[in-house]
Image (tube, rainbow, N blue to C red):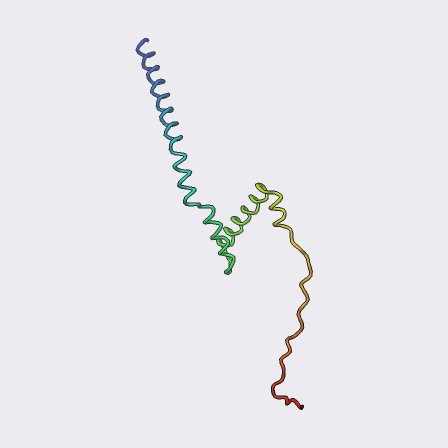
Length: 114
């Protein structure tokens, strides 16, 4: 009976010690992982890729992934910065500026009479 209690206490002690060690290792590993992700910037790279895809024809999975990434970017902008996001989404409906008059090219073959 006492041996079982000692065994159980030992198991609880070593189990708790293991959880403490795992917790300490996770706490130490999180800043390193955050630094690595911050240096690699996977979201920034994915958004750069999506913006560059708009210059060519889109079809299939490329079109789907571009739409997902750019939609997530727009929704994130609207959620994190609602005023700036709203202003970015507003469109001006000004009429196009009037065209300038046609360029006049003087006729060099015409002779000037003095």
